[in-house]
Image 1 (cartoon, rainbow, N blue to C red):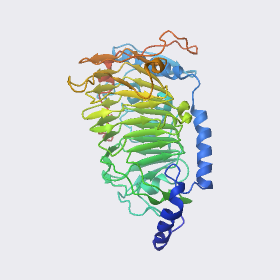
Image 2: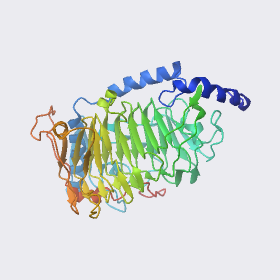
Image 3: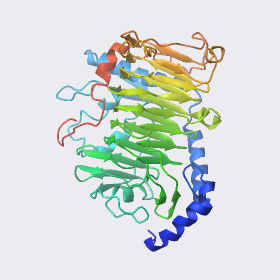
Length: 451
C-alpha cells in the first residue's frame, strides 16, 4: 500500500472544494481511469448476472421452499437442480432452521470449521454469489477506523480493499464506528457468525462497481452520513469522495450480492439501497426495525439502467417501527416472497417507472385504523395515472392479509410469460411465513453446535 502523508491533505482538501467538487459523479470526486475501468467491468458483470426469464428463478426458489416444507411434514424429498439431485431431507436434532437457505448450513455442528459452505446456500437472483469462497481467511482484530487512506492492518477497512477473494471474519465481538463510508472490492464475504459485531454510530458500507459480495451476520444501526474526503478504495488507489448518504448498505452498479441474516435499524437514509443497474441480488433472513425508508431499488424514474435490476426479497421480518419502502421499486423485476410484515406506518411495497413486482406467500398485517391516514393498503404507486399503472405487473399470490390489509393488483393475470420447462409453482401460503422467518436477523451461533 502506498503511504500518503497527512500533511498533504490540507492542500488537497481546498483543491477538492474549489476545483473538483462541481464534477462529482456517483459520490466520486474524480472519475479517473481506475473508476472508469471499474464501472465498465461492473456493467459487463451485471449484464451477465441478468436472467432473461426471471420467472424461472422464482420457480426454482419456490420449488425448494415446497420441498423443505414437505420434508418438515415427515416425507423425504429429492430435487433435481442443474442435473444434480439434491437431498433436502430435514435434519433431526437441535437445529431449528426452517427455510431452505438456513437448512443448507445451520444444522451442521461443524459449521464454524466449514464456514465457506455458506457460499453454496444463496437462492433467488443472488444465487450465484460465492463471495470470498475461493480465497483465504482474514481475521479482523482491531475495531478502530482512524486512517482512511492508509488503514491499519487488522481493521475491517484494511480487509475489504485487499485484492482477490477473501473470507473476512472477526476475532471477537466488537463495535465498529466507521469514520467514512467503507468502500468494498469484489469477491469478499464479511462473516459475523460466532461473535457479536455492530456497525454503528458512523458511516455504512458501500458496494460500488463490483461483483460477488456476501454480507452475513452483522448488526447495523445508527448509521450517519460520512463527511467525505480522501478514502482508499483499493490497495493501489484512493480518491476524494463526497458526503455519503447514511445508508447501512449501499449497492451501486454491482451484481451478485447476497445480504443475509443481518439486524438493521435506525439509519439516516436507507437500510439497503440498490441503484444504478445493480442486479443479481438476494436479501434474505434479515430483521428490520425502527426505520423510515427501509429499501430503495432504483433511484430515478429516468434511469433506464435499472431495467436489468432483479432482486429477491425472502424470509425477512419487517418488524416494529417501520414506515415505508419495504421495498420501493423502479424499472426492474422484484420477487417478494415469504416475508412477514407488521404494522407499517404509510405502506409496505411501492414503486414507480413500471416495475414488475411478484408478491408470493407473504404475511401482511396492517397497522391499526387511523381516521387521518388509512394505511391498510400494502401498495403505493407514484408518478403515474391509474390508466398507466394498471398496465404494470404487480401480483399477489398466496399472501395472507391481516387486520384489513389489502394489495391492489395490476397487470394482466392471465398474460402468458416465457416460462421454461419448469412449471410455475406457487410459494407456500402466507400463513407459513412466520415459520420460514422465525430466525430472521443476526444469529447467535456457538461453535461445535448447530447454529
